[in-house]
Image (cartoon, rainbow, N blue to C red; front, side, top):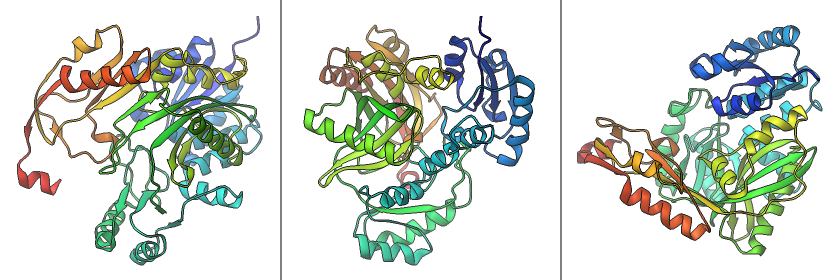
Length: 421
């Protein structure tokens, strides 16, 4: 028998390690001390607890692990681990030598825009924030509203909408508050190291879930996203997206061209895109699976485990997909939201979770917890995901369960508290 392959896994959650364990791979896990779980400590063949986002710290530990255990592949399936994993793969000669560069410009939204523009792909008007005056200048050039976002964070953290000159002072104050620090919502593993300004892109938003095999891109699913221009939180996802064949082709073609231009060659990717009045425009992309339970939705609707492919492909333990799959069903998630205040009671979660058509039902609040005003994904209170024969039916079911069956009682915040928040 051939010896089990060894993967150096950088960061991640239990589900990532589960996929490698199911393959029979030996896992040397480099994990941030704040993210260690009991499952990881008992399942990993070796465990190194270091801040893997610090290159000077992680490099000697990774080199020692390679010398002791041997490494057949360096993999990360989590956002903060993608850049260090790419850098280690290049260092160890386990890539084409460009993986770090590709991962870095996928993370950095400004580098992404600049790279695409150099290759002749459409990009919105954009620029880096360089003082308060740059906000005024950009508004005069690109028009209002425009968006300001950190160049390398995720999940809507720190996004701002500048609707007119009257918003400049507040936007600049928020930028000064966040710049140079760590993200403080959901994860502390990202540094806010700069801000991008870009023209507002109209139109409905989607994400495209893809797998790449040695430079050949296979679109597995197009995800319909429920958003609201009043804030930056995603409210739900649905697969397959309800699109005409023409629009589906426009989106998938744009993403395939984008991935090729960005030099993405292997593994899963999650690309957010808007179908604007001027055509498809890429918002941002990640060389990993999408969050917000998209992986579970795709598995339920298409029978494709994106995460499993992300684990098996770099180890040579799976064949590439020959073509995009056809949906077998539909799957939808809706996020649980409530008005600001204090939670007094939570009911119905276990009953909803027990229903056969429910993939998951969960809430993250208990009596006494504070419900914040909705700004980004970290302010959501929970989620429900369901499957049904078609997308319309799944949407109706999921929205009814979230609205009527899961009950979160909230004592409203006082008027002054709401205004300050």
